[in-house]
Image (cartoon, rainbow, N blue to C red; front, side):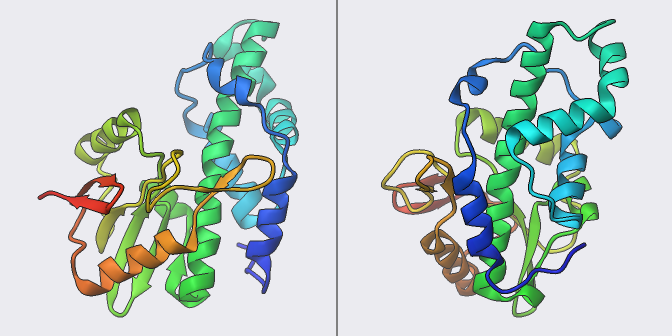
Length: 231
């Protein structure tokens, strides 16, 4: 892991703002199979961004991934990667990388607000399904980042019930983000349209956490007025 340095959040936001976005790739879903093991793009993203701090653009990451795993991908997808399959893979990697970049921004933002010694992110946490961990006083909060949509909530609950993603000690907190404006958890959009977490949302989480209103994994959704709790 390469240590953070002062101003890294601003540097990272500048990188995000420099990216060319490809909205059409969200609509291309010809390769939706699970890319497991070494083919899992999340592992490579974690190594590049987190351990090496090599911030690749969407196109650079696709080229890098394809160069590393073309042989394995051809065996998995087909004898040769046809143009339509290659475009489907590009879209699959784009969506994965896009979500990772949003998650990574939330991590940097939390470290700036709570201090580096109070916010942790390790490969073992990612494998366990936790995006990062925040320490407030003596309490650990395991943060789960995802977009606030019915489909994402369904998958989050599936992982909670069937994939043992909550075995790490501490409280597990869903911290979803909304693509719609006017909500406490709405993203702030950069000039190129990339959405990032706001300080207001993280501050709101902190106030709820310190008040003791957040219990283990009991945030079932988010409304315009804030978190909706259920046991």
